[in-house]
Image 1 (cartoon, rainbow, N blue to C red):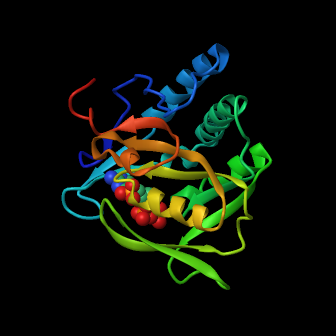
Image 2 (tube, rainbow, N blue to C red):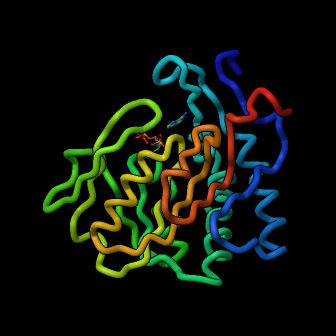
Length: 219
Ligand SMILES: O=P(O)(O)OC[C@H]1O[C@H](OP(=O)(O)OP(=O)(O)O)[C@H](O)[C@@H]1O
Ligand SMILES: Nc1ncnc2[nH]cnc12
């Protein structure tokens, strides 16, 4: 592996499963999840100074390059959501954020028997739309959603690959609520804890893996 590409493979530790305002996992699912998370975390790569100087870019694409890891990822997310929703509400709709939230959002929606709705960057969706502007770790953008994509009172889970500053996720949450959706929460594959993005979100947050705060400090 070139020096400029960093890997999490030496850490070999399960990441903390983090929930806000939700109960703990059942024991069987919990041990299975811990094993899955170690495998998933080891496959992530980091690229310094991409897409701009000072940004340590977390590359989640290797998770999809290997069918076993891909399967593990979907299974781990499904396990979490089903465990949590046993005491609560199944989502009617999974909302995935362009573009990396689309890599696993539709598969997860199928497994859960939910619909899938994409949130897109500006100018890509036809028909009546709602728009929200936001700032993310490395820039500003606009998110859009089709105005009829979510019905009043539908239960919605927002999924994305990474939560950094939380700007993208907060904008998507505001779009869901504008359409009358009930936001059950957010699910991310990876959280950049030091940016405290979850503080911008006013719904329960779950992240499978966490990173960067300890990339040099822990082994
Ligand atoms: O928490 P934030 O600071 O808002 O950053 C997180 C967002 O940034 C990345 O998306 P990006 O806009 O780079 O789009 P992409 O998925 O199309 O690469 C990532 O996939 C998240 O959506
Ligand atoms: N550091 C990062 N790596 C990958 N995607 C990101 N989105 C926002 N910040 C990011």
